[in-house]
Amino acid sequence: MKANSLLSFFIFLLTQIAFSQQLPREMLYGQIVADSLSIENVAIMNSSTSKTVASDNKGFFNIAAREKDTLIFSSLVFNSKRVVLTAADFKMKLIRVKLEISITNLDEVVISPHWLTGSLEIDHKNIKIPELPKIDIRLALIGNFEDDEQSSPDNTAMPGYVDMTYMAKIDLQKLTGKLLRLFQKPREKKTIVFISEKIFAEAVREMYSDDFFVYSLQIQKNKIGLFLNFCENELDVRRLLDPKNEIELIDFLIEKSKQFKQVPKE
Image (cartoon, rainbow, N blue to C red):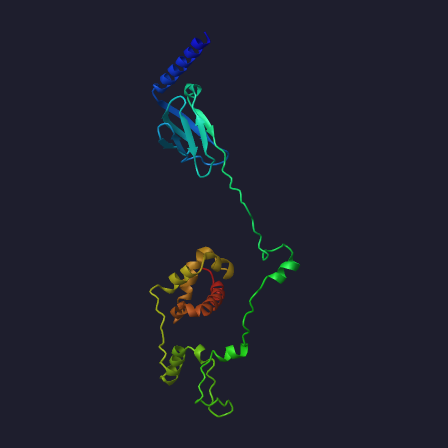
């Protein structure tokens, strides 16, 4: 009985293995997750079929697989991981696989004796600063000028000595122009005669407002025209219309206003 039971168990096991090997592969969808790191371009290989895919920038992937296939996740940033698929994985719409960050442990850390200790009193003794060559300021200033051994030194006490130090600052063009004007004959001044197309009364009326005649000259507004006609009777009165004779014109109007007020009214 025991032999028959054992034989039946092996037959059942072989049947299941054979059946599982005949199962077709289907598309498995998953996502890789990690802590605070990008999970793109992680390689996912199905070791049963040697097919490899890569995850996108959000960690999603899909690969053809079936129950008991082994998926190998590998990346330079994360530790490799193996996942053996089960029937439960295919019942899920999306499986999630979490990867751990790969941490490289240093076998040995060598601390150089020349490193800074953090103490200024100690570190300033260990730091070697190269000395800069000393510069003779006097020689540097002398080097800016051309050394001419054939030239004799300037004697400022000699007659006719001209200090050329500031000659570069003189505008030679302006200096030449001034010298030429000294030798030119003076131009004859032309007398400009002022000519106005308007009559005296009309021109003065446009030059001054009614307030000037009313408040300054004490001429009634309705008699301003008569007053200007009275002024126009004077000889050579048009020359007062020249702008440079404006002061003389005002004095003339003030004097004529006094005379106009003394004229007997009809």
